[in-house]
Length: 311
Image (cartoon, rainbow, N blue to C red; front, top):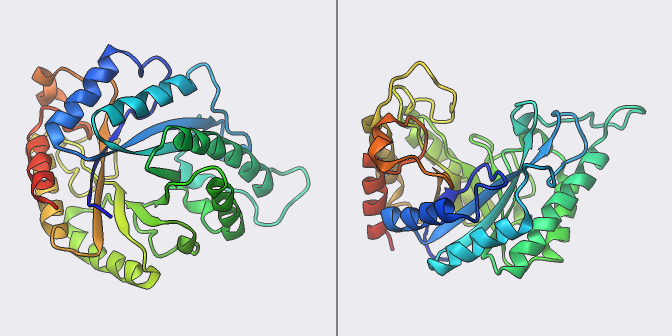
């Protein structure tokens, strides 16, 4: 498999922000600025709370199918391979890692079986689109830590996906969870969110390497990146870190050190970096942006240089 030089595009995927001139410009700029060969097209379905059993992907703000297909088609017109990545979010702001139910069914309480039935409908809907649009990869879930112990349900879901989708399948576990998933043998590639403190990067890399050796599967980071704020290199997963001032240099240094650490690892298959919005800020105002996006920032040149030299 070729090295994945990727960037996530379009998050969170709100109706009306795709399939327009601004979105087209955004994807063009992403390809030009970063020399990528892959993109993860990411968007959300919603459940009301972490204990709700219904996932709604047809709300007034949800992407229409034609918008999703437009994004895939646009990416392919730029010679990018596509990983389609539908993700569940919780409407009240709870992080999806906390979606959880009793392990034993209790009358009058929400149940895992109810949730997985709804989740499978959500995932299968987009797996069919991934097949129709010839996406090279499909991501069946993202950072759903509490669900991962439900091994039987995940194995059943993956079988159902394979009935409608013929490409590569991955699951995006959260940081630190690579060794906790017991059903990696069902997917084609292991992936995780690599938001590790730069000071702890080498230790975490060694730990992940041992997991990959045990599982004997290709591994890549489905997410990795760092906001451009003071202190973010030590807590790159904290998108709400608001005490730090804007710091484009710290973001750039994080990428430099991360790339240097991973570039000679022959067990590692690449990055799907986080993230690039469908509606870009003005390049002239990049110095005012403290988020993950690298558009117009020093890190974009670092990424492009690294991707250009990788095989």
